[in-house]
Amino acid sequence: MTIELKAKSGEGGRLFGSITSKQIAQVLKKKKIDVDKRKIELDEPIRTLGYTDVPVKLHPQVTAKVKVHVTEE
Image (cartoon, rainbow, N blue to C red; front, side):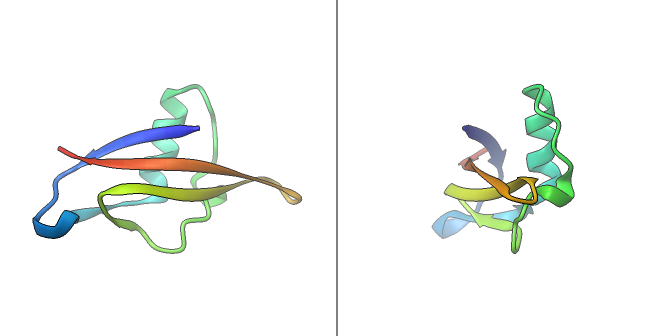
């Protein structure tokens, strides 16, 4: 599954802010997928434009990957 988020960015595709697991959880909730933000295993916030694979822990033995596409606002 791919989700899209928009963010303001500067030169070189660096974001002014960052994309956090809370924002990813909110987008998933809008798509009727209820995932706790603590289950989204984002080592550090996303700070660049482009695609990032983010693991989501669904069950102790099941991990899914969500592709997050960050585009310029």
